[in-house]
Amino acid sequence: MSASAGGHAPSRAAALIRSRLRRAELLFDRVGEIAPPLLDDGEALRKEARRLRPVVEEVAGRPYGRLPHVAYRGRLEGRLMGPWSQYLTLGIALSRVVRMTPRETSRLAIPTILAHELCHRFGFDESLTTLRGLEVSARLAEQGDPIHSVSSRLELARLLLGAAMSDALRTGASEEIDAFFAARAEPSAIARPREQWRRARGRALPDWSLMVYAEIPCAAIEGAVELGRSESSRLAFPHFPLDSFQALACAIYTAADSLTRRREQTVPLGATLRLWRSADPEPG
Image (cartoon, rainbow, N blue to C red; front, side, top):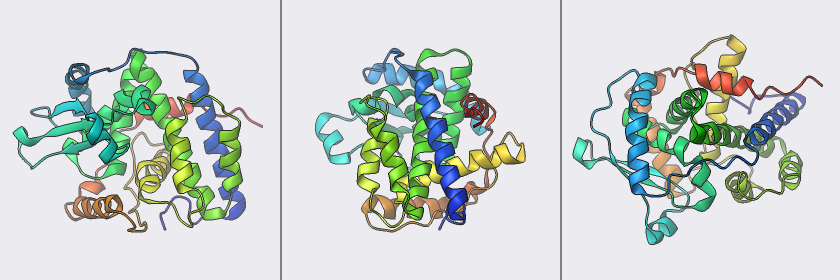
């Protein structure tokens, strides 16, 4: 059981679910019908990676070195690997590769997803890297960047939805999530979390992806807000069912980062927190 939702009393958990859903809804509304330029091909991805590198270095506090080769997965590879993008390396500079999901439902969020994958240069852990990638993207959004203004909001909303799903699975409040999706007809902005909810609904516990990509990062942001801090605290260690190859792989590299103490690193969250507060629900 993770430290975020599992220990909440039922009434507090219900309030937290509603608060997260309301904040996600406001972030989706901020995006609205905005149609930013898209990163349509490998060359556009590589150009964006070069632009992201100095911001990634600022957030990580370390020089990056040689960028990985970045490209979209081909059609067959995309079908085999599912919705995941990946940072792959043999530990030397020439072996670094980032393979991005080609799915159309991810296209608006690709700038922030790319920031996430580049941040894997500094650690395997998905929760730590999610926070770093979101902070990179939120910083660019603050500067008026059109693609990150959309993608950072979509990824923060996805994170909130995933954390609400985790709470709902533990407390039996699935109707809250069902009602959220039923009230939103637009196919593009919520297609990815809707698909994730279809996979997760009916489980007794959140799966690995909900926990590491959403529940733990969301708890870290909420903890920083509560403590009045501008950086994350030490992240909770995830415990999830080892019921797939992806879950087993995630458990192994999360443990590796714990053994090397990389999971003890903090992440600056200034821009993320300002983005978070921009979607504060109205009182009442």
